[in-house]
Length: 94
Image (cartoon, rainbow, N blue to C red; front, side, top):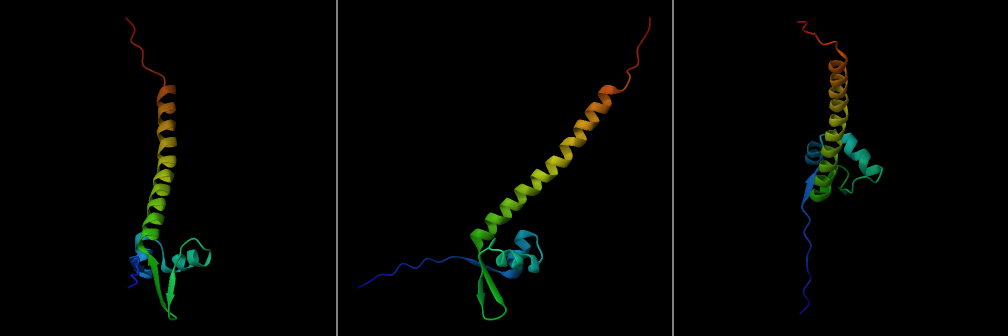
C-alpha cells in the first residue's frame, strides 16, 4: 500500500487577502502580476492565496508602517527638544 502525504495549505479569498493587507483588491491582483504574491486563479474570477504568505506580507506591511510612523514622530520630538533647548530661560536676580 502506498501512502500519499497531503500537504494542506490554508487559503484565503481575494477579499480576505485585501482586508488582511489593508489594500484594495486591485492592488492585491497587481502584486500577483508583479510576482510579489503567489495566487491561485480558479476559473475566470476566483482567486485564492496562501494564508501564511498573506500573513507574512501583512506583518511586513505592519512593520513598515511602524517604521514610517517612527520616522515621522521622532523628528518632531527632536525638533521640539531643540526648540525648547534654545528658548531663553528666565533668570532670577537677587
